[in-house]
Length: 632
Image (cartoon, rainbow, N blue to C red; front, side, top):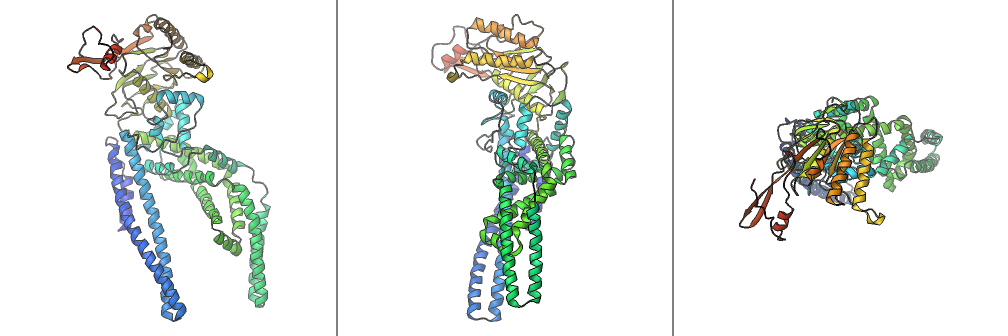
């Protein structure tokens, strides 16, 4: 019955639902199965625990009675009780492992449901990747990192493997077009493998966020091994001593045999002590870093067991299979497990006295590193790519209405073209779709509108979707075309009083860097996203300075989107390169006063309204403007 229930759960997780079905259906179904499995296993564990205590008491009683009354029946009962107790302990541990797996599956499904619902309070805590200064700017401007952020939706794999690789793909300048398309093909197929996505998430959430661990691991695996004469000689001496002692035990008198056994134990303990010092030098401080091998092994198993996937994941699968990486990492994982016996001093001493345990372990570790050590960085790199692809595929699976953009190279066509693009951090049902078209280099799209109308949200929607598409992932649009571009932003600007940097100077410095990047030759064009720039000066000066900045960017071949309250900044820029769009509000007056609503829909042309005085009036400050409120 238990095996059938386990098989049913495995079959359930193997179901690949059509993408048109809501991914939450899959998570709900698997979660219900995992919860039921956990309930059964907890009950079984409680029963086994009670039985274990009763059998232990019976075993103690039987041993006491067998000592007092040495009859065969009590001896048999004592032996049977001990054997039954050991069997119950083994079965209890087995149930515990299965319960742990079911519990982790529950957590993974709940995390998936929270991501789908954008329930940020219940999405697992963010493990923030280490970012460069340039990446920090984009991450801060576009909500790539933070409580409600893109990275939090993608935080699936090991943070120092897949998580770090994904950050590189998002923030670095885009890879070549073939590499991007190879990622896309893999993501498109992986999104239909929900069981694998969950399995990688389970492994990844168990990993620690310590990049130094990974550096220590690669250093250990690739550093020169040096002389390993002692472990080899020590193993040979142990064999010789064992054979010699065995021969004397068979042929010699008992006192001589006893002396030889004593000598054997002493010699093995000495040799094991030398080997242990060698192990401590080699593995000292690597307990946690080497756990990344076990984490990578968990993900690699999933990748290798998958059917062949096109694109980059296919490359990962083939190389892991050809190298025998699973068997090799599994062998190292076993060696690490055996090394943990040092934490049980009595058992450790017995093993060393009996077989020279540390001598053999040191030799096995040396042989493993000599054979596979140089390949560890490559395997970790492959796993990092696989986990990053899995994270993007998980996002695509959890948002089945999102599509894979058509990626283009070159600068002759549209940089961005999406008829209906949404903000990826908002619930799909709540996110208003808007067109996003930047049709050629040098194009400046000016989005105007009043306060709270949706301009900044639109800028971030375009930026986040571009970053996702250029990483090889989906975009929050059913269809889209995206060229290789370098995303540059100036959205959230902060002053720095400690360095005497005003808000205006900080923003001008940021804009200077964007223009500098736009002028970089032989690079993909810059896609700039600017929000209400140059606010630290008067209206006339701001208008003229904004025109200068946008003209410099257009002349450099950059294209992008700028939001403003002042649609007149378009004047003098050259109408062939400027497109104006706007957001607007609906204003009405009723018994309670002025009421304002927004539909967040993008419209062609410049805005002709403002709402600052209306907002003041709504807050009880001043009066509404004299013009009659309009109802739209």
